[in-house]
Length: 145
Image (cartoon, rainbow, N blue to C red; front, top):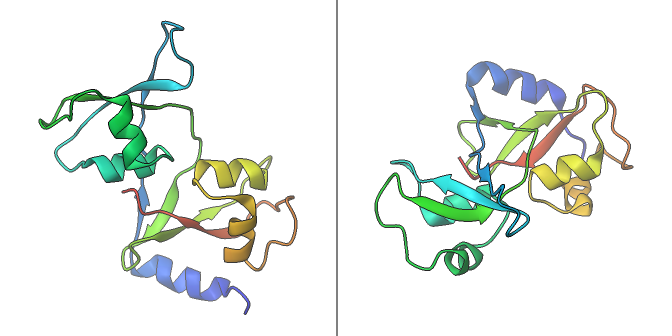
């Protein structure tokens, strides 16, 4: 089954929203590498926060000694820079689209969207190798926002 770019174009006119990722403040003390802090907002829950930081609810719970029950509380989360966001079609709860730019590598794209490279290739039958062409539109997980 081939991916229909015309369908994506039509869908884009019907309502696409950019799902902005949550960002964390890296721990700069040097005590623990790869961790940082994130402040909960009114619309957050732990499961969504965990998904956005490419981890599990159990790991977020284990990193935080007491559950944050109040909004504006700070959680410890896995923290690394992610450069890519998805454009989500409002009718889809799980997937959105990402347009490849010059210099993108499939492994970096997959990492930013918390998906193994082979799963990204399976989801996008138009991608046969790990080398991507700028302008290629990829279907990517976009459930975190």
